[in-house]
Image (cartoon, rainbow, N blue to C red; front, side, top):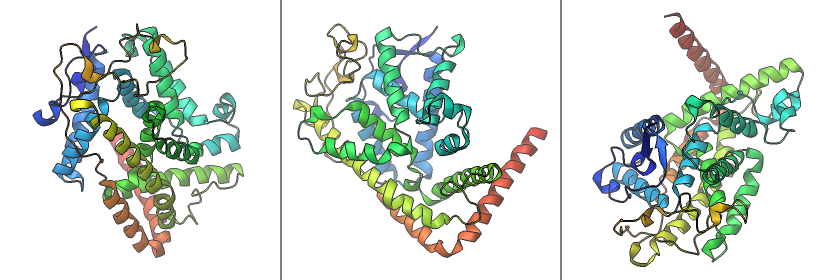
Length: 375
């Protein structure tokens, strides 16, 4: 099977300025079809972000540079696990919440003992899919790499369960209070980043945020319809006749999204300062850099385990690369959060109209889908 170095995935069609920040040697390779699929996703995101977002091109370039610098803090396994977790974190979602599964006594809730029902299901179904030979994208990993990869993916996807939200934020705040950078558990960092991405639609421009809100609220309303049929009490935000859409989004921004992104930004600042703090701006092996720990006796933590653990700026034959200074991560989401909150405040007295609009938009999407099937 053809193989493709994962570091080349990161440089596909990027500007020469950004590509110069990334090393071109890696010990880990992906099947060619996987690399091509990832490149297509990255390219679409690059085009969309740079042309349709409120973020200016210079701001976007700075954000991307910062992201690439963080990649030099991560191993190839950690990068791949993060991409994979982001892709599969809602795989085969049922369109209902964990609470609905528990209250209705679904087979899935019984299987996972009412704990992180959907998150466990997404992970399990995704790894089952990889057992098929045509989907064996992890076939090039050693046993140690696979164990590290799977452990990371499990931890990241489980962290998207909203029931663990406040504990996750509390834990990260506690970690940020430590002066010793080695206390920063990389798995928890990646988990928080994925969780923040999962709830981040209020941090995007209004048109995109509003469309996401419409679709999410309709999903909630359909769950409410099922709950009514089953004689169950309505879950929060699931009653299509009384839910206050605008008010709920303002609360979501104030109490969930904004505090989460603030902690995430502080966390990324801390990592960036560490990366920039290396002598002569060169990333090298550093005993103070936290590494992913599976078990104390795991081969992944032994000197002989070289494939899953190397720093990307530390590959043989590479010349040192210097990094731009700055010390803080751009936070363009602040403008979007403020603007979106103001937009919702203007709609506070139009909730009945919003609920009707959500229902009609859902009906139109269904008609368009059905018409497409008939053609």
